[in-house]
Structure formats: structure tokens, C-alpha cells
Amino acid sequence: MKNDYTYLSWLARTYIMNRKARLAWELYLKMETSGESFSLLQLIANDCYKMGQFYYAAKAFDVLERLDPNPEYWEGKRGACVGVFQLIIAGNEQRETLRDVINMLRNTSNPQVEYMIRTMKKWAKDNMVSVP
Image 1: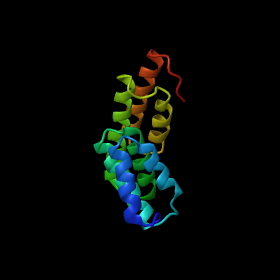
Image 2 (image 1 turned 30 degrees about the horizontal axis):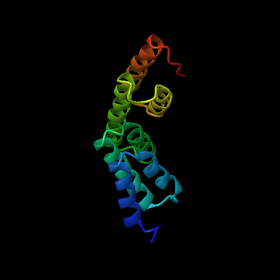
Image 3 (image 1 turned 45 degrees about the vertical axis):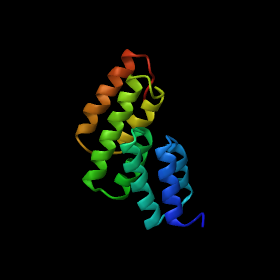
């Protein structure tokens, strides 16, 4: 029962709706690679994005983008990374998260990435946050 995809997907959705996206991400990490794990990853990416839990949305879209070069995954990742950045600026996300966001963006060969990273690094420098 606990390995049933329907159960896992509803459990992940419940975690996300209760602002516990990390637990949903951990469910995905425990799964073996399969069509079901890909579907769970899509659910996590989209539901986290809808709920404003952009860090885990970005992580999920990053993996999806590496598995499938569909431009929609880049668009989701870009939006989620900007969402994390906005939360950091507003003081609602840990500043250290910016390092992960910049590293995720570096996994993409889209020309927009350099401008985004430059903007994030400038803010980090102005606000004394160390980034790679």
C-alpha cells in the first residue's frame, strides 16, 4: 500500500498543501527511477509552484529538465528560481538557498541564465551573501 503510486502521489500532494514540500521531495528521492517517479516529480514541481514553495519546485523542474529537454520545464524552473529569489529578498527564505538556485541555473544552457545569475550575484554581493 505504501509503495502504491496513488497513495504516494496523494501523500506528496498533502505534504505540499500543508507547506511541507521537503517531505514530498524525500518521497521522490526514495523512489526507484520509473514512469511513476517521473509523474511524481511533475506533481511535486507543479503543486509546489502553485503553493509558492518555489525551492522544491525549482529542484523538481531542474531534474525534469535534465531528464527531458521540454521547454516547459525550463520555464517552470526559471519561474521557480525567480520565486525563490523574491522570497530571499523578502526575508521569507534562507539566504543560503541562493547558492543552490544559482547552481541549478548553471545546469541550463538557456541564454537567459547568465543575466539571471548576474542579477542574483549582484544582490548577493550588495547584501553580503556568499555565492559561488
